[in-house]
Length: 275
Image (cartoon, rainbow, N blue to C red; front, side, top):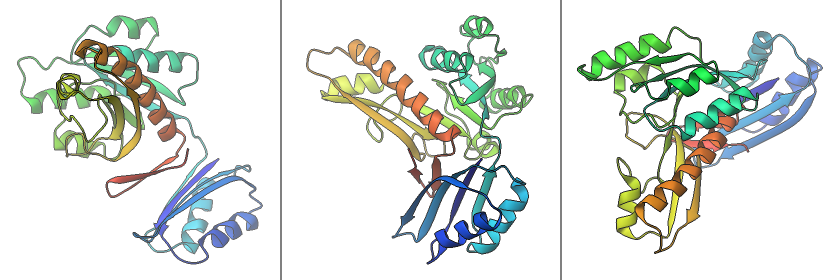
């Protein structure tokens, strides 16, 4: 069982939390905590051994924490995932393989795409694929159809596995804190389209990838994970793109794992990540 807590900081929080758990004879297996001194904000993730009434434990913990505390007791840590795609397959294929071998930390409920090219690989892994074309439709109509499509399923998060469409504020508002994107550059550098072309033209010596939660600010949502690799003058833009796809796959997998294991806390536009 996983317990995650975010609240205003004050003296004695760890003792208060431990006291509630001890009173219920709940053994703490591990505990990670962090205080953002500037924001006076407390974050904690606990793994406990005994399975108890989650709602009752959540109420007892909330009673000893500052007003407005966010407390979540999660007796079933495996999450459910919807995936949105366009044409690129590298991130989707990695997700499907991990899902098939039960190493994803979540179950993929469906995949939806605005192109039909990735339907075959989904069929091979026996995952429902829905083709929702954007051609000849307004953005609003397309997103309404896409939302109706994925909401046939129950899911905790939406993974944008190279979904190359900018989502509207209305769509994002329907899934607050649930949409995770992989961006093909080391943000905040080279935001928007064609980042490898921009990086090549700039003559950079490092390229990277960034996984982040999606907000209304394009490519500026809270960052979950990032990674970089060195490149040299000998790299063409195509070489950078090939190397970048490998980083994208690795960073996206890492970010999803962290989120699925309840290791990521969001406050304002930043994250606290207990790896």
